[in-house]
Length: 338
Image 1 (tube, rainbow, N blue to C red):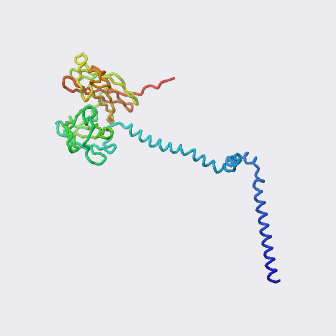
Image 2: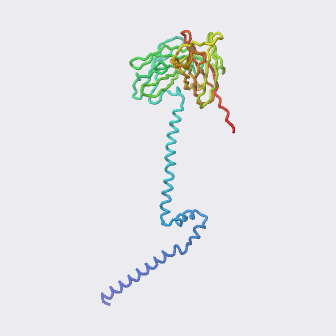
Image 3: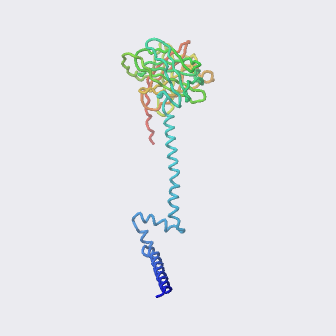
């Protein structure tokens, strides 16, 4: 057999093989739908029926491709909202943290520079450093002062409201006497110029043997020399609580209180246990045309939790500032029933 014949037979064989393969492929392509009726897919109790349904519902055949994309799109806002909520909750919790519990906040830090003296008045110095690490020298005036310095014993039986002097170098100085050995908390209440108002706190120690005193019992009457101060109103957690304090002297209403720190009284509230420093706002001010000079002084206090609080009222009469103190208990208001 010559070469030409051999090549012809080889080419014919290849053509036969190719035709057979093509026919088998067409047969397989028809076998899928023939052996799997649509009724069988929709009747299936398995997850495969869920997968087949979108395909049969789509006239274009693209449902299987677009459905997952649509699902992802539907989930995206939920994920974004959750991300935002996390940050919002953190910011909310930070803003809800009572003042005085931190020695540093928003980049500002309260730093004692000397140790306090016990049993005698001595110069106490401290500063507040800013976000740049340098002592702050510019403050806004709040209640007639650039900074209010409060020192209370941990058992809340001792309280001092002082007003230190600011040096050009950013160092504050004040005469401070810790009356007896024990643990104390000092608070700096201030507003740096151009920044938010802050209350920072730091612990002070008076060396020596001591035993904490019990928290004075809750009551609505306080005696300060010839003066009696009565408290009207209740603390309710999570709400602004109206507190009215009435000042009398020798049983007679005092109607000529003198302005002190821009009001007829200054009220500080500290939570028993951690000594959280709470926001208390006077209602009105001298000279506003509606606020009288006694005998009643009204404040609005915001307490974050149930529990005991110590209230310290500073008021001025006859040229002298006096402090009346109370223990008040915040209780949750009963739920309203329908």
